[in-house]
Length: 218
Ligand SMILES: [Zn+2]
Image (tube, rainbow, N blue to C red; front, side, top):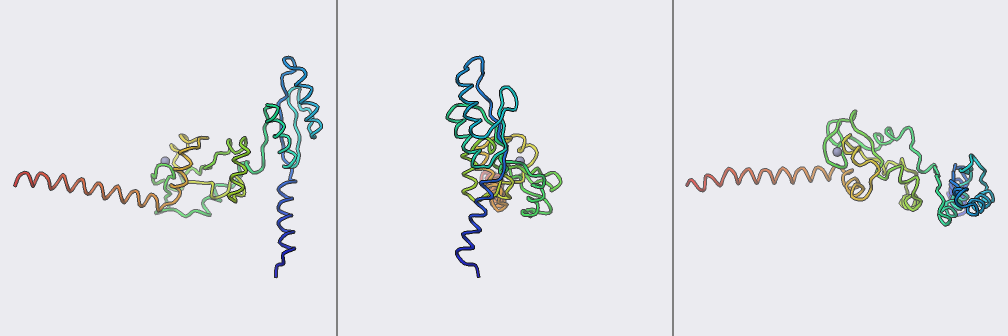
């Protein structure tokens, strides 16, 4: 029997693991020659937040997620460029295997491309991250949005879709309509219905083309 206290402890453990694991962040300092005061102010503040100088213009640190968030907040306020490679947004080495384990082929070992509906054999399928890794790295709002939706990280099977090489190249780091297409197209039933409707329409057109001349002749 699991009591309320142990559930609370489990939640607090997960929260602590998330908030206190170490992540690397780097920040570009303002140009020293152009704005000496801003350079000194940023350097002092970042040092106070636990960062150290990596080169003349870059400060780095490996800190907990919470402290990285404090640094990014300061960077946004001070208009400083930063790069934070969160573990949430790192490409895993086994995401292809994860995808094939959780998604079965639609027909005879082939997958529908989530963007164009073409059937692609498993050996030629490219597994695409629906929300792109590059965007996820830079966009804290997107990271929070996916966390709210229950995604464990960018390689969560719900963020992976099968695609043909052409669509994968065309999509690249784009979002917008590609996300809508991908979210619909990852369900094989969507393509079955679409292809059926297309076949029915084609049959109707062929019937008309076949019947109409016969009507005119008679
Ligand atoms: Zn495609």
